[in-house]
Length: 162
Image (cartoon, rainbow, N blue to C red; front, side, top):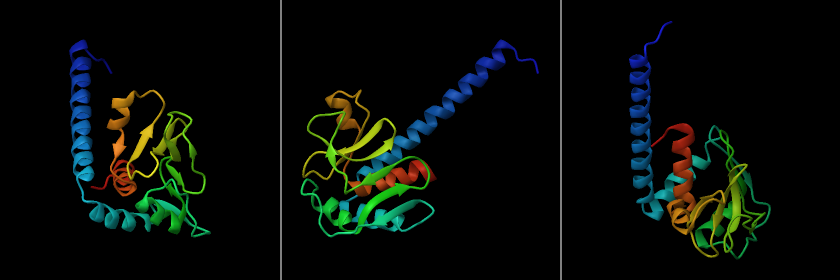
């Protein structure tokens, strides 16, 4: 098939517009999820976690939890040892909390790929996704208000629900 330069440029422009629309949609969903009250986010996230097509949750083998975890994370850590996505590479491990290898002052509670840590600050509900390249402003941009908000966003990203 013979493409002219104009057709190639038009195709590229169409793809860029589609990407911009997807980026805008993702930003809208992220904004709406982040604005959910904690109680609503918790209710929605807990429903998502019981769907075995989306998440594999290993029950906790002890009611003891790490004292670095804030109240809501302690509550979920009493029920689940690990939470893994069926698609993707995200995994939370409430038994293996350790200082972040990527950012001082943060603690790793999981990973979202080989190079992305899911981290918290001690006794704060917010979850951050970091890869070690962020400055302090960019770290704040990676913040989800709570684990529940992160679960809802992860569900949307991996499974397309909103």
